[in-house]
Image (tube, rainbow, N blue to C red; front, side, top):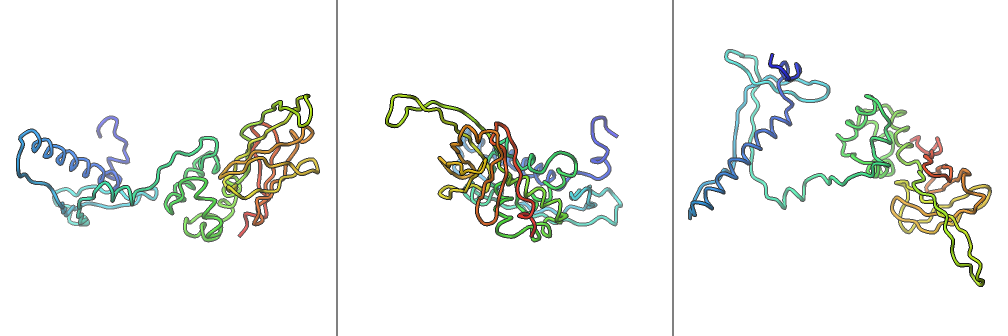
Length: 269
């Protein structure tokens, strides 16, 4: 066994996606070399690879939900035959069909919503298989499909998924600041507070109802995923109830860095 190579790779071969990536990478190099030859040599006519077909004899097995392939050796009669046909694709076609890899807010990521540990990593992998790669997608899928449908498609325990959905939707206080503004109708300055809250349930143009310390909290600004409140001094540090509409109700303390929670009954299908 070679030093530095994991035993899993030696025994099971390589993951199928890595095999495809290595194959296409070498084809990219061949294409780049042919393009260079045409430019340097100023050739009026040259050749290009349009399609590649391969019949690969290999052993196929599953390892932790991943497909591994190991090329067959001489005399391995029980190996399977994998037929691959590769064709070309243009840049516009790639951009039209590729996954949108927008960066997530590190303070509000899917990994954080799912928690830590190996169980959370498995949960994230299962969600990614059905196209869920960030908190916003998870929240939208919850509203359009429901918890039971997501759990069935991703092959997840319903209670584990419910907890992840509540963690993902929970409001969080990202900023608390106090400012002094000019008073209306008089020279004396007036102190005011601003509290910024984030949640994937927040939508531009839809103002949630917010209450704290028995009184309403004015909403200054509401956008996609963010909310700015102007609480009274006595409301700072108190628990606020946020009614997002459609039965979604969250609770969070109006203090910097506070992570809220959703009402338990909302996540149940």
